[in-house]
Amino acid sequence: MSRNEHPSLDDIITSMGVAGHRICEIDASEAGAGNISVYLGWDVDLDERFPIAEEIVLPLPAPALAGHTVLSTGSGRRLRQIKDDPEAAIGAVQVHEGGEKATLRTSPRRQFEKLTSEFNSHLAVHQDQVAARGLDFQAVVHAQPPHLTYLSHLPAYRDTAAMNAKILRWEPEAIVSLPAGIGVLEFMIPGSAELMAANVAGLREHEIVLWSKHGTMSRSDLSVTRAVDRVEYAETGAKYEYMDIVAGGRAQGLTKPEISSVAREFDIESPWA
Image 1 (cartoon, rainbow, N blue to C red):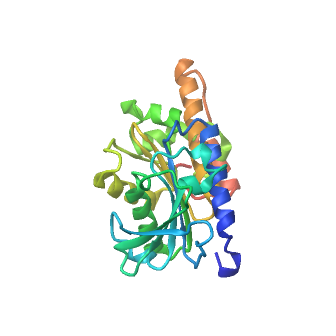
Image 2: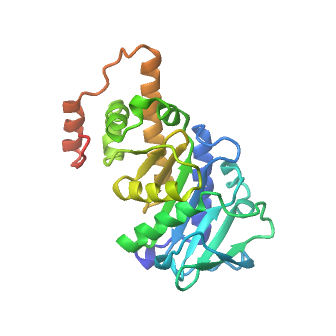
């Protein structure tokens, strides 16, 4: 994304509202569950929307983000409410030189005490991807899609190869939209350093990972809504799989040769095709 293509702060905040609303429409965020963050690797004027400033210590060093901004939802805020009152739900983190401290910018309408409890995982993914790939934009979305989460409670599905074999077989679009598939992580305590490290590693190989018995985290360097699309495609495959389980496993789904033919037609390279 070149400097001339950078969206405005207003456009980014609007897209966070649209993304939060869509996550709720697919029942992937009950009450205050789920969170969104966006890294902006260019200068942003925050004074009008986020005039209040306080110094904070970051949960981990993020030197690759120094001098730039991460927008993040606040702890306990409902994703469905971002659209109507974004300043109540979003904080802007301006990372200082060295990446250990930051200025948290908020609005007088702020309705959260601190940023999302999973901010460490968000920040770590931004740090990792920006350092490795030189990105100037990235969106990260944590959601709790019910069918994917349910499948992760079944031991037979709590494996990356097994999960992808099952959920990528229900729609031709799945292999096109999720060519790297979904990475499956074991259950780890939400907000823990263990989950943070596993999540970062998973999102190097995949663009969406499943936190077993909890939810998903997805990323996109194109838009916030594209990160949500990954959740929606994966959750749709999981819903079909759940329907087939309930029906007694009677449906065939796409065969491996059929999935491979779709991938060839759309010039998709995938380990699952």
